[in-house]
Image 1: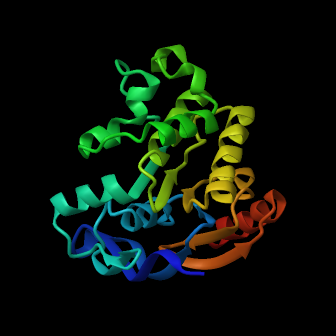
Image 2 (image 1 turned 120 degrees about the vertical axis):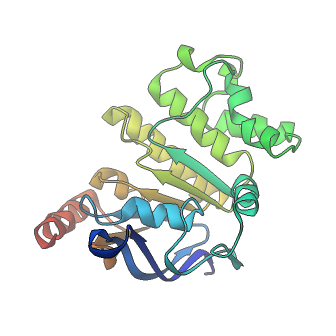
Length: 243
């Protein structure tokens, strides 16, 4: 199985001199295409930094990041922005919807920014998959938190990205709604062949993934395949003691 994203000896250091903080330390990992990968670790372990470097939102201090064979590290900001719009989807804890736009307009916003015409058939399928086909004309204030997050997922999928990145996408949701969103992400992998990479602190959320990467002190220290919530929680307890 090929990798959708590859990190090769990636380090990220913030600050200089004695005040420098190493968020990532020579991380090398491949994130498999068509699979669901969760990233976990104690607070300050480098989870979000890994996600941001993998997605081209942050630049490594050293090392290389490749998206489908395309090297990101040396790109200018304009080219990186274009690449993110065309090849990457994002789902974050804050839904980041535009209040004045309808569901359909929020979903198609990345296409409009990229000056691309929406594929109406695909747009309709995406809205139906996230359960919002009948709410395309509603505005965010008319939706529940779970529905707003589903709009964010539809917006991430509508460009047919190579990878969807999620940074605590269920962190602001109640337990039942969070599980609905996680099932939806799982379905995009199983039914659409989508690649999903998600940072989370929740063992239940991580149990929806195929693989869990564990970070501590800026390094990948463990990997778990076919995780269960109980096994993830136990591993996190040990990592917390390690940190």
